[in-house]
Image 1 (cartoon, protein in one colour):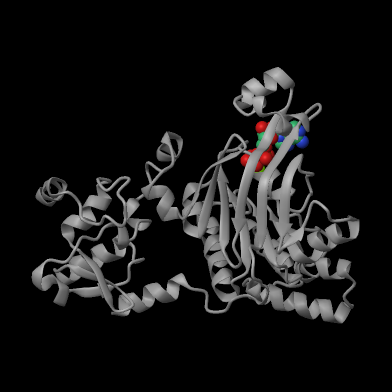
Image 2 (image 1 turned 90 degrees about the horizontal axis):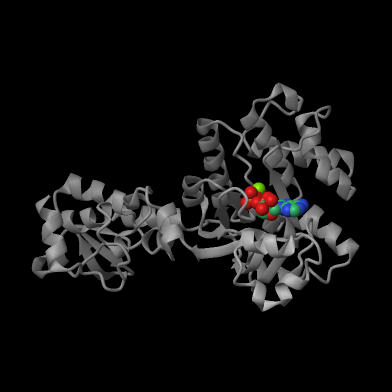
Length: 383
Ligand SMILES: Nc1ncnc2c1ncn2[C@@H]1O[C@H](COP(=O)(O)OP(=O)(O)O)[C@@H](O)[C@H]1O
Ligand SMILES: [Mg+2]
């Protein structure tokens, strides 16, 4: 029972951010292209280029389609991860969102406003107040103190000194840098410097935070800390985030949904669980091959119908409980778990049905079609 409550609390944001109550998507991208090279705008317009691979396109036209006919919505309050290998177009895409890079074609809305049609003033407002960027190289001003770095965006906005220093000090505390406000960036570790970057981005109270591989330069333990920090901030504020990474485990840990990019295209968009459980093609399947499935897949995909007295016994778990958590419970209690949603029994999971997920024998299983074939189940149970 406590597991049900825990899973529900972890899956929800206690406080929706004040900007999060808007009706439509935070960001809406349709058929977006960015082509680098000569006469770039002919590429999106001519369908005959669509079949060409990246290298064929470059050979034939001298152009690189860094972002290729990409469409997606970022929902209010979600962490939207864009993942892909180096060169897949992630940075170009995220820079197109505020037109730091001018898209070649397509449409783009930010909280319902057309970004392509924005004039210089509206764009400046968008970049300074509404969408804050956190970069991999921190981008701090070396001669300014931590507080003054954090206050920088507010200074540009024209906020008075006392007020902006107060707000900056608040942000410094928020990201765990209490007591370090008067240091200069050179006196901080990499992780601390990135916390300053984060505080600076938060200080302007943006509608959306954009991260372009912010933790790639940090060593693994610090990186893990920073990921936890982002998760904590998101849980506290529910602010919409677009997070770019080339690291699959980072994407799975942070993302409510992940857009997986390859050669400028989005090859799959889905929750971590959807991507791991149902890869769209061989490329994605290969990408997620080594992911510990039990840490991403939920009991909703592992359960089978209850038989006889099973419906009355066993610990209750929510359908979004991870298989790894259910394994612990089953191991501890020695009996199956009941998967319950709103007081309704959806099915049960036991040793065999959970092991099927760990073994990867559930691949491409339809979550609605919960019962595994008898043969498979016996095979795993016998292991
Ligand atoms: N200014 C540019 N001029 C020409 N090609 C570029 C430019 N910027 C990026 N590219 C190319 O676009 C592709 C995507 O780059 P990028 O968006 O930086 O990828 P990622 O961030 O995923 O590593 C790459 O092939 C890169 O070489
Ligand atoms: Mg990049």
